[in-house]
Image (tube, rainbow, N blue to C red; front, side, top):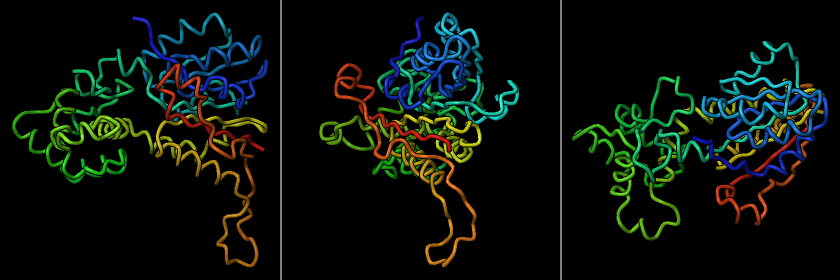
Amino acid sequence: MPYKHISVMKNEAIYYLNCKPGKIYVDCTLGGSGHSKVICEKIIPDGILIGIDQDKDAIKNAKKVLQPYCSKLHLFHDSFINLPAILSELNIPAVDGILLDLGLSLHQLESSGRGFSFKKDEPLDMRMNMESSVKAEDLINKMDEKGLKKIFREYGEERRARQIAQKIVRARKLKPITSSKQLSLIVCDAVGKKALFTQKIHPATRVFMALRIAVNSELEILDSFMEKVADFLQPGGRLCVISFHSLEDRIAKHRIKALERECVCPPDFPKCICSEKKVVHILTRKVVRPTKEEVEANPMARSAKLRACEKI
């Protein structure tokens, strides 16, 4: 089955990465390899592309899509949090560009069979890396009400987190919750019929997003990676982050701003004693959004936000 995905903000990402022949770039989230394909075209003949993805389907697809375009291609079935170990294995101290595209692929939503979408009746899995031990089903059936409420409220920004968590706990006493459709119906029942007609988004949207984030530790991994990301860039090297919801974008924004800050001493200190130096220059003072034309062609792009910086 072909790997279905349309890469978001491709032109903008390539522009901010400033891809040049002979340079080294990392696509930390290969997805459908749309970004990587264009990167390869820009860096030939001697450039190096390092591609990483937790999803084996993405790696399998990348081997087909990218091989004709880049002779110096290194693919890793791994999480981008392990980039330091990957660079060490390749004997590469630092790179010229790093891309993070944090969205789900169309393949994962429509064809993976892992329960990412509430529109399908699939096993409640949600693991991006199928070798991970914790499934969405495990959290839904074993976590206490307080823990579920916290996940839905903090990761999904769901206002009805408490009543949804209560409904899930009651429902699982009757029988285990094992499918995406089953969970979706429980959430809809918890929020009431009125929400089905008054909300702009499906009532299960935030719950499914929150559960996926929790299963894959997405925010913790992103925050930890962003804290150290400048260490992996050459001077002049660039970072480009494409996020799809406010929690991801907030982490990217704050971490990039922290890297540009020259002093971290309290404001009331008469003199700087921290000796902190500016590490990056921010390239996107205002967040970059997809064009109207792109959103019309690909509705999945509508919530995308891009931020970029360059190492000094």
